[in-house]
Image 1 (tube, one colour):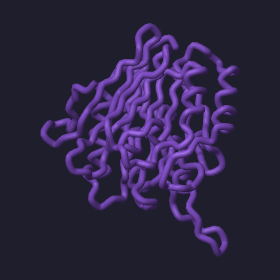
Image 2 (cartoon, rainbow, N blue to C red):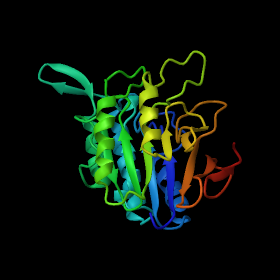
Image 3 (cartoon, rainbow, N blue to C red):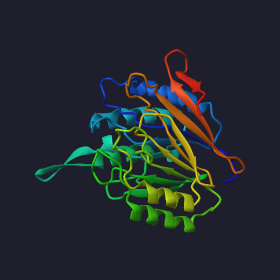
Length: 279
C-alpha cells in the first residue's frame, strides 16, 4: 500500500423498520457529505443487518440510498465492502418449503456493487482484493441461525490461503464480520461461539483490523503483540433509548497504527454528524 486509506464503517442499518431513526435519503445525504469531506482512497464498510427481521423492503430502501451516494461520486461502488448479519436472513420459497437464506442480500449486494464478488448464499467467507486493502468478508450467520454467530473455520482458512497469491503483500489486511467475537454483556448469548480459532488465524496472518457490528455499541480492543484492532460500532439507524447512533472511521497508514475516529448522528447540526471522543 503506497497511500493512506480511510474506511468508513457503518453497521446495523435495519432498514425496513418503521421506527427507524434515519430515513433512507437522510442516510444517503449524510453519508455523501461525510465521505466527500475525506481524502481519496476511501472505503465504505457495511458489517451486516442491512434490513430488519428479514424485511425484503429494507434492501430496496438501502439500495436506493446507496445508489444516491455512489452517483454523487462520494465513493466508488467497488470500494463498498459488505457482509450479512442475522437480520439479513430472509424467507425464500424453494418448491413447497419456505426457508431462510441470503438470496435477497446477494441481489442487493450485486445491485450496489454492480458485480457478483460479495455473495454469500453459497459461501461463508470471501477474500476481496482492492487497490489498497485485502478484505476478508465473513458471514457469521452462514449456519442460518439468527440467535448467535458462528465461524466456518475451513472457509476462513481457504480464503486466507489465497493471500499468498496476492498481488501486493504490503497491503493492509482487514476482516469484516457482523457478530462480535468477544462477549460483552452477562446475559448475551449471541456472540460468535467459536471465535478463538478465527482470531488466531487473523493474528497469524497479519490482519490489522476486525470490524464488526451486532452489539449496537462502540467497542474497541487491541490484542497480541501485532496490535490486531477489534472494533465494533453502534447502529446507524436503529431506535434504542440511551444509546447513540454512531459509526467509525479507520485511517490505515504504512507507518502508523490504525487511527480510529468515532462519530455520532444527530439532527442538532447541519450535516447530522458530530465527533465523539471515545477510548
